[in-house]
Amino acid sequence: MTDAPELPIVDVHPAPSAPVSQPGPLRRPWHDRFGKFLRMRVINRYLFKTVLTAFAMSLLVITFIMLMGSLVQIIALIFKNVSVLVIFELLAIMLPSVICYALPFSMAAATLLVYSRLSADGEITAMKATGISIFRIAAPPLALSVLVALVALPAYNNILPMAHFKQSNIIASYRHGDTGALIETGTWTPLGKYRFFVNYKEGNMFRNITIIEDRENGLVRRIDAERGFVKNERAENRVLFELYDVTSEERNNERTNCYLRMTAGRVDMHVDMSQVFAKGQKVMTNAVREGHLTTDQLRSGIDAMVAQIPKVCSNYGKSPGQLRQDIKRANRIWAKLQRQKEWRDLLKERHVSSDQANTDIVTRKLFDVYAARLSTIGNGAGQASKLLREWYDTWPQPMHNILDTRSRFNTEIMKRLSYAFASIAFAMIGIPLGIRAHRSEKTIGFLICLVLIAIHYTLVIGVTTFSEVYFIRPDLLVWIPDLLFLATGAVLLWRIHKYA
Image (cartoon, rainbow, N blue to C red):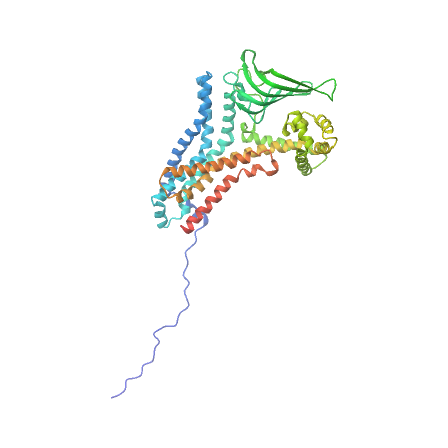
């Protein structure tokens, strides 16, 4: 028996060959991915339609609620036998204003209500389970908020200021309404050759009245009254101001360093209204406030203010930066002056506040009067007199007026832009808050919405209150509410995307 031939040993495991590179998936350009992100497919159309419906209903409800506050004013006009046509005209003018302010709040209510219901019904969880990102779920209301902001922008810049101006003219019309409505509390109101300042109003009675009269001889008279009333005298085309507990002060023409002071229990003062209203029209001819000017008019006013800066700097022989430093230094001196006992005694003696004393010295040129009286108070200590003189020599009033006006105008412009783009901020924060609510009841959505509105309004009003304090840049601070809501909403959305 012969042996079988020995077969060669063959390795059944072939040597590893060089790896073959497989072509990876092609990464699509960012604009294609962004287009896919915003493309309106079934889910996106469903979310967009749902939020749009809720937005329309919320806008209707919030507009009605906000309009109720104006109805009180309209009812008061009805009892004054105002024409029905004027009432309807006033309503037509008020409506655009109310709608403009209701747009961002309606967006907040819509996103909160829709996404809280979707979260409570488990639809958000179902969409995420199918691989839909939370950012894509949030895309439809954000796209809607951008459209709302673009529509609101021209309304805030043009329609709203004109509506405010016409509304104030109709309410204060000499032919149809109460002329006393022209005088607003807490601000100077020009009427002909007079400027009125009223601290507050109780019904038809004004309290703590200050009147500055610019006389033809270039002098100024100041009238202070504890209370007063306004009555129309239509036949004579004038208004009667009944002033009580009156103190009047004016310069004596024969003795320039002497001032005549008069006190009376009652003074009747007539103001010619032909210079306030155009004849036969309801249009004011006086200068209007920044809230009544369109954005283009505000920008033109800013340009006019800036054009005056080189002339002011030339008069003082200083640069704009040096004049700003002078203003800061003068403000510190003025604050130090308020702590002096002699100065407080002088204010008490003249029955004026610190702001009124500032107006007396700067506007009415009464520095000599205040300085002479300070030198005789406090047993000749003279510290208050030195501070007053140092402040008066340092204070560049023309530059302050330019910076003050520019700051107020810029703040008004930025406030309008902030309100216009507030819809985006409310949508951004409303989506994650609605998802986290986990309730289908509408009460929780409206409660959160009211809290957001209160926070936004408080911050905006708080910033615009300091619109004249130009050193803190209120025109930039007015964006804080929108930026705060945007940042908070973005962080909450990211947390839901990453952990939920």
